[in-house]
Image: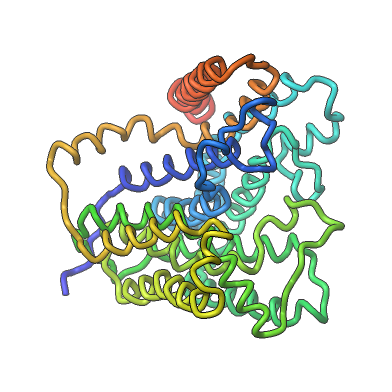
Length: 415
């Protein structure tokens, strides 16, 4: 086996982050509960029949975040290093985050009280259960900052990331099997499972048995295709599993979605999220086949079971025809393992600059959607024009925040 070598593959990860952020945007434009958010007469979801995996995108963000922070941070051994790490993280997150909060205040003046605005500005709105409804993606930043803080302890005391991940998975399993008898605040469950994703990314970055495998383009495209259909299959699989073991944790009506945003069923996405990081970093590991087998195998077994019990009509009733086609395409792409020409590769690399705006795109798109929701469109032509202007403004704002405003603030604060 080749000696482990770490080659920078930031472009692949930037593109993944860009795809995930854009997916969240489309999720909020096409999800049925947001039907009138962008326009009261026309709904993009009526024209795009495939639901965008917005929730899975956030889980991918957590793994990516853990990977990037772990790979780019040396062991924190003293107060000076900890302070420097904290400053870098805060300067990266808060300048654009504050703009995202103030944008809501500007769009909806008088809607939110000062305590609510302050709790969002200081990123403690999730435990206080008052996330700004006009910028719902803010909830995930509370998780991110918490994980950044815990990472200081992990790094300082050199806690084994692998053992920590196993421990989190065991705790998740214990919480699941005892959830019918013992009450646990849903936010605790969400924090623990979300942290398992973050630590999985951190563990991959620190793995010593990674080697460059040169995995070809088709396998990367395969996982992007699988990304689009996983949210159709895994909830059904978890529903069948929960019934089989007579454990069906329910959504708690006394708490908002933001306090139970990550649920037990979400742990099933972890092997996929780890697999996509390994593949996009061209990393070989003894776990690669196992992760691949679980990710694809669980869907294959589910499809066979559904056909056996319900027949093919079930797939039409549940809207699974297109996801099944995408899954088959993903499997074919993985098994074919072909490469691409230099021109196409060059075209993909040229997207590197635009992929740098993913954080701003993610954090400001929702209030921009709300703003455009005030504009009435008399016909479908005006609605299409409105959609074009929306994306142009959103990309322009994201570009300004990431590549102009953020560097300016960073220079002023960090020198």
